[in-house]
Length: 251
Image 1 (cartoon, rainbow, N blue to C red):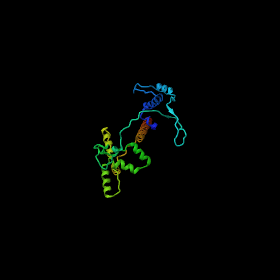
Image 2: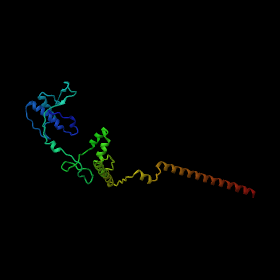
Image 3: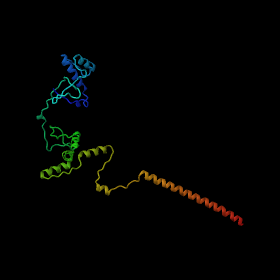
Image 4: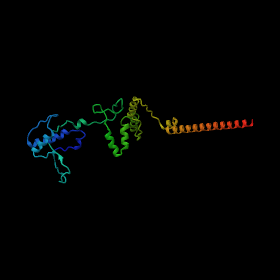
């Protein structure tokens, strides 16, 4: 018997394997051989009918018992007969180790595969696993000096030869590749140190709110000036009229 994890079905969407399990169980009990084509084979209703004729549950599931406790499992389990093919993958053909070998010209990462004397691929899921364990230093080694940190991997090799224990990771080449890809999209990126940022600190541009407030003050001030000028003109006209009247009276 072979026990398969049900989590191997949803992501692969291999529903046909489940239907084959049901159909194989019914065919085994009925003692018949069934040939089902790939795209035009037995339908679900036909599979249920055969299960019913064989005296089996139409769900294709059965209650299984825990071999350690003898108690039944909480939920019924899919059982049946399917084809299992043996793949000729032997450990002797898989065994591989690498110290220093060829690197990719673009990413500066080790090549892949035993045939190219490549390194062990450490994907994002493996990174998540080490992150879950909090293995920060191991991750830093794997993602820098053991991969595409060109300067760092040379220095770490020297430190191993000299018996020193120093690890100072630099910038991975994959980051430079990312920068080049962004530059191909007309997005310029420059790396600056804290010292360079202090020396070449750009003048802070006024914010939009400050600009609006300054404009509002200018407008308000301009209106007040206009009102004052108009008030002075009215007073001068009034005083001139009064003065003219007095002069006329004097004459």
